[in-house]
Amino acid sequence: MKIIKNLLAIVGLISISGLFIFAVQKPIENDIKPEQNTDGGYNIYALKIPDDLNFANEPLPLSIPDVYERMDRELLVNTYWQSNALLMFKRAQKYFPVIEPILEKHGVPDDFKYLAVIESGLMNAVSPAGARGIWQIMPATARENGLEVNSNVDERYHLEKSTEVACKYLLQSKRNLGSWTLAAAAYNAGNAGISRRLREQGVTDYYDLLLGEETGRYMFRIVALKEIMTNPKTYGFNFDVNDLYANIPTFNVVIDTEVPDFTAFAQEYGINYKILKIHNPWLREARLNNKSRKEYVIEIPENGHYSIN
Image (tube, rainbow, N blue to C red; front, top):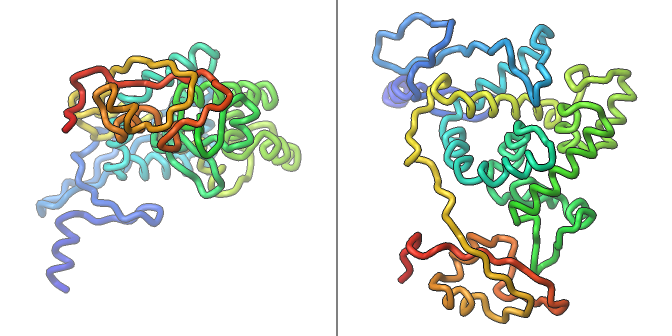
């Protein structure tokens, strides 16, 4: 037991929001400095919440005590969950350059790329409710906005096309609800759900609503990730560009016929089936049926980026 206690003292095991994490990062430059630990252990620092936090230029009312505390929680949890945050930095280097110009084209604020971060961790995730892809789009929403969703092809996994759909949804929510903050909350709880809560509680602002756990934390999580990922060194994250994931250059192959065997198709371009699927996750089976002779664009990585045996 003494050995276990000593081990915990060395690594500084802490529990935040039910998650056990190892606090091993360097001290953070903040106004609040606890007394220096002199026993050789690691130090945990309280975080100073910036006064000017905002989402899409809509400020957080941090003078409201519960808003301040909820923001503090998410900033702490996401700062001291170092492995997860560092992965977000790595993946963002790969996916943000794809997402950002599509948001700009539609007039959706750049801050919405952090909504994708908290929705999926910038991975092609699958939710228990059936939402899929980096933007976590439900099947009905996808089909209503022109995406193909079936066992053979699921374009919710197509980053460019799913980002287009997310923009359409967010723009409609902004028109319905009046603010980008409420539009973002509606991405989680639905337009009808947010509208009903506003009406029932007689308020007009997200930060005045009493919401369930998930939607109640939603905007604070987005703003926390935005703050941390915009100011990595402030929160103790140190990395070089070479530590981040690269977006591998590709070229397009247009097909309008059936593809009976994607293994053979991939080999024609000097890659294997795994690599083909990495770059085209929307292809859900080892063949493409395409009885309608629809035109599809398949991405193939340029030569020299993979070593194929």
